[in-house]
Image (cartoon, rainbow, N blue to C red; front, side):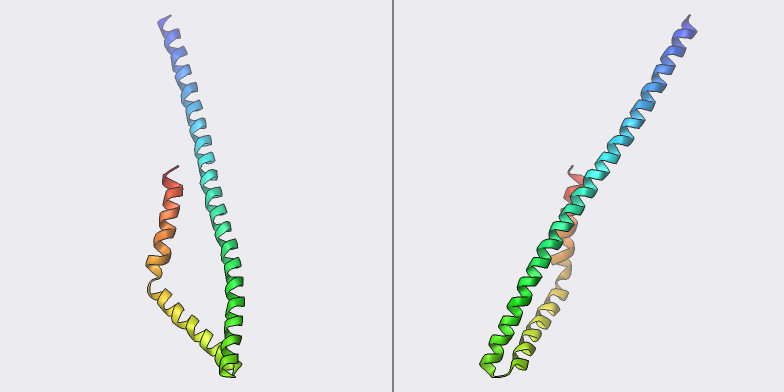
Length: 116
């Protein structure tokens, strides 16, 4: 009688352990999906905003180069000056890229992965 009761409890423990493992697997799959979707949507929004800003920057650059070209009576000089400004800006951005890019991105993804 005691053996049958012990056997019954052992079977219950095995069923509960199996259910716990299955629920844990389902939870982590759902958590992974949530993190992947948050990351993907954040990257997608960033890309859309970046494309829109690049279009604005492109047209403003062309307008600025034409305006400088009109002032100097040489469109080529206007476009060279605007190109030089971008070259200087790119050099400065290259020098401070670690502080400006890697830090905020690492911080944002750390929030997504570890705060939820």
